[in-house]
Length: 359
Image (cartoon, rainbow, N blue to C red; front, side, top):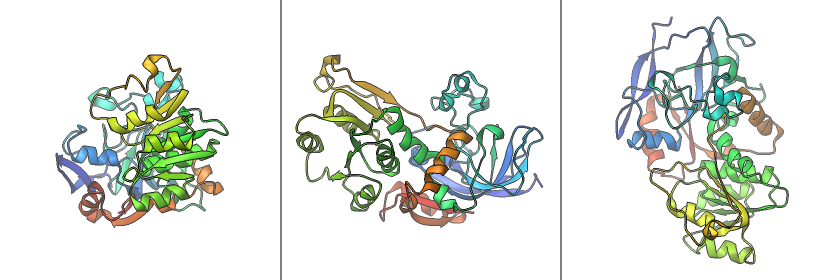
């Protein structure tokens, strides 16, 4: 069976990801083969498409798997074939120095190509990813999380990456009950950061966004005030609304200098800047907003926490009804039309947030 072929979206060259035929992966003793039932496209995949983040030619892209166990390696116990599972975008080994130091995302077990700056991110980075009919899940016992029967594929589709990442921005910032938080940009990650800030106890969340569809969903995710940066200066507006006090936490969810700088400018003395953006240029810290280094501020960065325990907790949140991320799935495509889906997603047309891809 393992010599059979499957469809997979592969990186051809900058500007081109194409559907191709590849052999179904052969697994080793610690792995699992998962038949993909639903996956999606991430902003990071668009960085790969544009050649802004380097991967090997011919690599299958994608890192957000929902599926069914097709085959288990001989060392993998506690699971059964036919079971519905997800795995995180970041697949820790469970036994590396980073994992044993409590930093699973920074695992660094990046396979044969050596270390890359994205820690334990393997799917669609250093090994074949999830935009295919099948995916090999490495270190399966650390990564496979069974999906409760009552949850649909689309309900858990955000858990492997954007929900975990967005929530981590709120968690790393140590938001306290009663805090005031600003979240700059309400793409999928920013929306999850908004939801996460509310879960952590923020009582006022300012979301900064200009796209009408995203403004609407930001309110559903818990934003108390959405500030349209095309109509007002968001820094001035946040300082006005906080009566000059500033916010306890500012979350940067876009990855550009302007929003990074704005986060600094709205922070109270002693506030925390939580950075979730993926940056492609050097950042500059503005002297005045940084209080010349004397403001007791913190800058924290996060990489999507992965592993089965993280996935279990996130699915608990979905099952509890505390957060409903279904509105984030705005479009649906078959795997055979993934090139069209990329074109839509990369150009951010038609109010797109996340696309459910089904083989």
